[in-house]
Length: 395
Ligand SMILES: Cc1ncc(COP(=O)(O)O)c(C=O)c1O
Image (tube, rainbow, N blue to C red; front, side, top):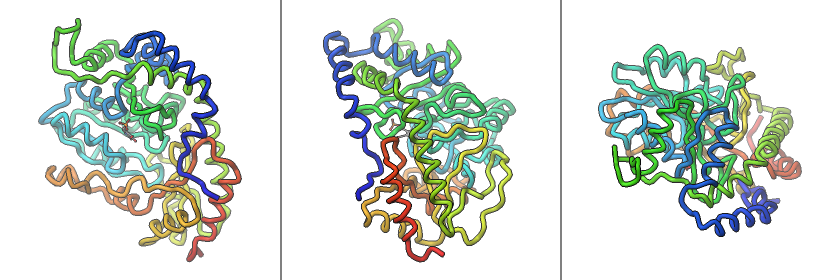
């Protein structure tokens, strides 16, 4: 049996009629830049996550860039971001001319460790970008407290966490800005690139809107240098079809995660994330003999499971498991094989901004994500569990 890591057609093709109708609507409107479809999606997403403003942009990457630009982050500034994450967060900081300072990961939830962030604040630190990794919120109370103490801006990178919640609050709606991606593998996966910025401050939202349009207002009058960061109406119209079903997709991912957890935790040598967590959840330290550690959801979080990421312990074991799953037709992926401080493009950063990321380094050698998409069947999940159980050298 083949189990792909992701099957976008399984989600999109049943919507063919509605998606085609949305396409036809835009085609007949003759409006292909901005306009009512973009405005409607912006309003719907903002309401969904609990923010005042939504600003549709070209990608999740550009969403971060626009947010940084709107906060005047630039040369001479330092911005804290996770060492263990996708590149876009650090890349955008670097593109503004600011210096990314990499913060170590929490071994429990994989998110940025607020204690390490506090250790890395300097006089030049201007902002912090927590990433809600794999669909679970970072420890936002600690992040917001740190930001208040040091007068830092907060941009929440919610690319993997649209609709996730932290103590009842929507991920992305707690900081100065929240950013989302509609890349096809994201939980609200589009039909190409797309993204959104959300925020609660009227002035910041206006600034982001202006930056999205080459910094012009009115047209052809440029107060500052922005870019073309506009989301297409066609993309917006198609995404609106999927947003209406988003609750079902999330529920299915959560059920899939619970099913894996139930089945996999019964296998010898497999434990549910016993590592200590930065949120203070009182768990025992990981027993030395655990060969696979399952991901967990902190009590106060609503996890939306963009990824179901295992920690596979022992030198070379993660790569061996990846190969073992692959030979049995199971798709899996390493998110992420290198931490930000290990990236070649950042070797010229000051040593100080690249040190102290030991947990992130460990996760980069242990993390392996299994298929978790909503349309995964129980039969497919059972196959994954069986193949994992057969992984040699387990107990
Ligand atoms: C955490 C994170 N931030 C930012 C991005 C960038 O989003 P995009 O690919 O839409 O530019 C992604 C995804 O690709 C991501 O996973």
